[in-house]
Length: 329
Image (tube, rainbow, N blue to C red; front, side):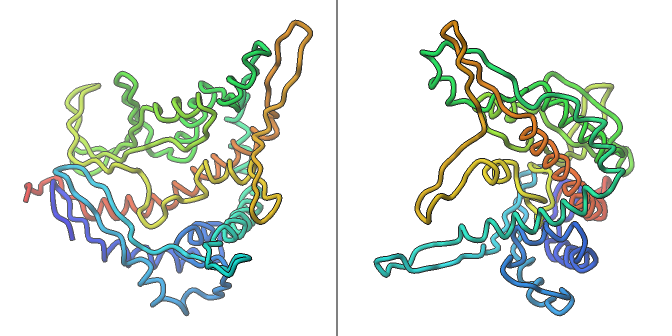
């Protein structure tokens, strides 16, 4: 247990609550989350109630790390590894064969998820933007520019992420904007508020390099001093459930699953879908399919859905652990 700045963080209590969550949500669309790190994708577990001791061990490795009023965590749970022999009889790591099994688990959850008409309507209401921008470049500079492809519509994506927070975290209905920082927040305990904080700067930087990664959010507990000034009491450096990080395939992994292809056991090719149209004036039009963009947008929507359901449990744990009257120990 870690005690500091108005809050007691009991790793054992969180593990026990997470075990109950897993057992209650097996055989639902949320189950794919459990296979990202906790469960072995090669095993059909049937009823997880028959594997509680195994689950308790898997959930026993989270440790909160405290620096004054800032919280980080480590999860020392071991990953799953597949070893094989190569042509020379040497032992090599062949864990890459586990990735398609994860894609299969998540794809099955998504099929059920997108059959829900309400989710489809909500998605259609916020996805009205082009995922990519066309670029017209001098033919001589073609390959220099292609290094940063695909060319994401940065403003469109950042607005989409903000809309996803509105749709999937509606209780965080108030907003503070200070410079580049945006805090979506709700009442918490006493005079305190609970907020999701970001500046989307990492996303903007990555987009310009052609990288697709999920936004970096922090979870903060704070007091309001005035309309825009706050006093932070506790900052969780990463807004995610420590046992479900990530709650769905992270954006880079999903992007890789759509753009990297094994052509042999030792060779992988990369194709991000950027197409070239050579124009008559010595320039080249670079563009991407919006069908591919739709796949990315749908994955982001699903990711935020899973983030909401998993972090809801973590927020409940934080609320039980937080005492605004506690003194620093």
